Amino acid sequence: MALRHGLAGEHRAEAARLYWQAFGSKLGRVMGPEPKALRFIARVIEVSHVISAIDESGELIGVVGFRTPRGSFVGGCWDDLVAIYGWSGALWRAACLHLLAHDLAPKVMMVDGIAVRPDRRGTGVGAALIESLVAEARERGYDALCLDVIDENLRARALYQRLGFEVTGRRSSALTRIVFDFRSVQVMRRRL
Image (cartoon, rainbow, N blue to C red; front, side, top):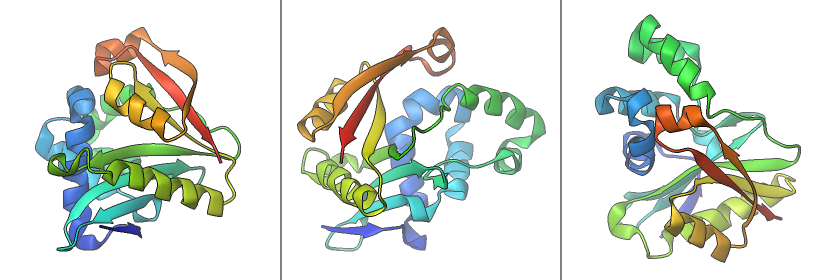
């Protein structure tokens, strides 16, 4: 396995699929239907905010995206929403997605999604991606790496704790329960 900063053009659609596999169950109500969601994600991927895991045959097997004040792995803007969902579809989706937005603390890089191909989960790909992101954050001068993990995602939380992340808080909202089918997330941080 090789880890690369960025994302090759031929891996863009596969990165969108991996991201949707990891987060589609929560984002589906807002970003669906799936074909539109995949087109939106592939359109907005910021290749400067991702680390890719590539297997021996050159296939993409995982990605970890990150967010900084300069951008995020999967972000996009109003024009991107309109291009995929139309004006009215963009309007309500933007309002819903705003529920997930929050400001970054100074000198903190945020994980903006990690996704590993299902047949490679449990083989160390996720841990290698996180450790590579830790090195990237240090190199860029950040003091900490943080992430949000949905309370019910015990497997992910256990992985992050093994990798040195600590729970530092919780965010909850009745609206995220209605819109995204989760009520709260644990905020986790790893000092660098």
